[in-house]
Image (cartoon, rainbow, N blue to C red; front, side, top):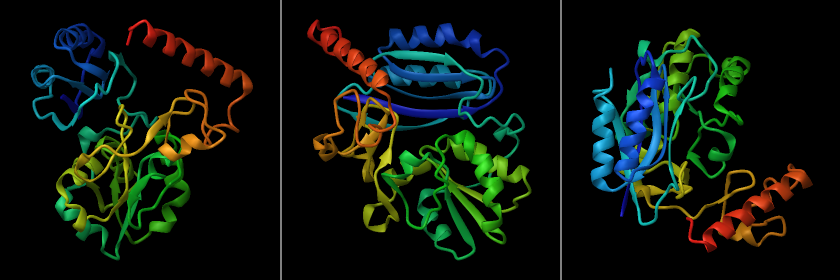
Length: 296
């Protein structure tokens, strides 16, 4: 059984690159795999491994400057969710492209999952999904506004063009694990919006804590690991990943004529060139050959 830990924490790292060697060495020594991002604004990532390994890495992270309050969400998988361990140095731990946004200076009001339904049922509250369009497509909350963004960096422009729709409303925002809402609520506060709320722990915490009969969530939640999607109780969902476009599809979509393993699906067949498809076929061939050699 593999323990999966999804985490983030905003703090100030003066030299994030200096933190990488020890962190990577510890993860490798403990059999932990996944991806961790380090930036001047903090740490973000999802890792998986044995219970003892996850505990060791979490303890190490909480010992970093300003990270004593780091929180994380856990799930479990029978199969390894990640093939390798990566620690990357980034400009932002979640890319919004707004240098003035700093969650450490203030965010929206946190709303516990068990209080979320009452909040979003109010007529004076507008609910906004801050995730990307392909994530929203497989599941969201009843009545949530979908900005139809391709990337989180598009959110500020979307808000500038649509804020008139929400005059006089309180804004409730949500995302997968909470990190995008840290930035988006800080951004809205900076534009003068006074009443901003966000789901503490994100969709994952809601699906973990709120029983399905009381839930207002519809569909599945996309996750950035081998599970692809999860449902209520964080049970692994039915989706698989198209490795041509990295979007979630259902098993029955693999029977469609546009589907070719590792190359294309109905969502991307018309948007990738023949050159792209040939490149993906070669990649898939190398993956198959490596598997035949027992190289993972």
